[in-house]
Length: 117
Image 1 (cartoon, rainbow, N blue to C red):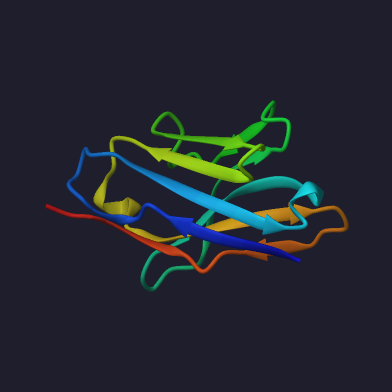
Image 2 (cartoon, rainbow, N blue to C red):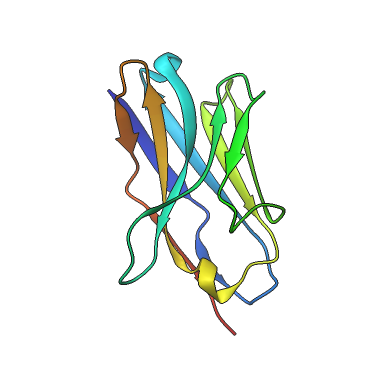
């Protein structure tokens, strides 16, 4: 079992920045990838970014490339999402994920990000 707790969400103006954090506990050594999804009101949950446990490989959705940066600190069992140049369409609940061997995926409870003037 892996427990994921997100933090760092909030209200920000367009063009602003936020950094999300996701602290993992439990069987974190088995987490090959960690990452983020988001879900806007009335829309399906969508992939945002993920990072390999070596930090050597990262993937991003086209909609966030060049604006968002994912990173992880394995010593702290924490993954981060630095979000810059935020747009109103980035408004969503952001969920942390941990993917383990065997195809098991764990989800956090989510943190709200609202981009509005």
